[in-house]
Length: 144
Ligand SMILES: [Zn+2]
Image (cartoon, rainbow, N blue to C red; front, side):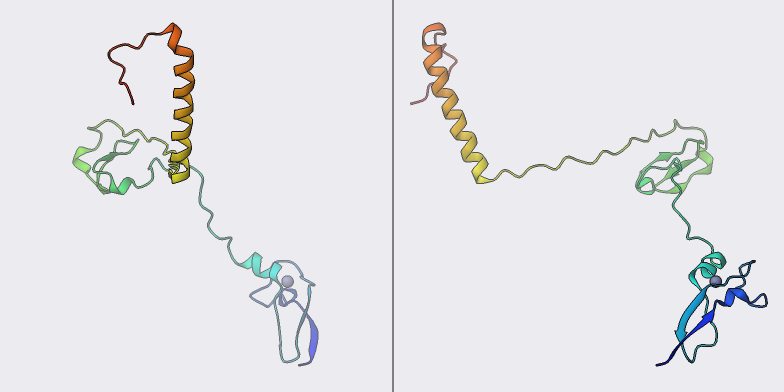
């Protein structure tokens, strides 16, 4: 396929892609292509994608699933459905920042063995040091 270089369609004031200035971008296209548009002109014509606003909405995550949620403006919602007759009658629901749960470490068999081992070590040590100073009381469970 033969290739040719054409000027961006944005260079044509009659074009719907005309960006408001003469775009002299050169584009390499296939020979049968009549006109082409550069990415800059496309970007000018297409509105930027909506970005998620970082502003707090006053609604916490999953508020629609709350049995009752009172927005900071006083609007009462029951499971996400507005209850106009209750407007302003209830205290505003405090939004608690949900902290990511700490991952519970799964205890492996190795961990258990290690723990037991260390406990036995401790017991041995405490027996040695405690024989003189501390007398075993009745409440202490004696092991064999
Ligand atoms: Zn262009």
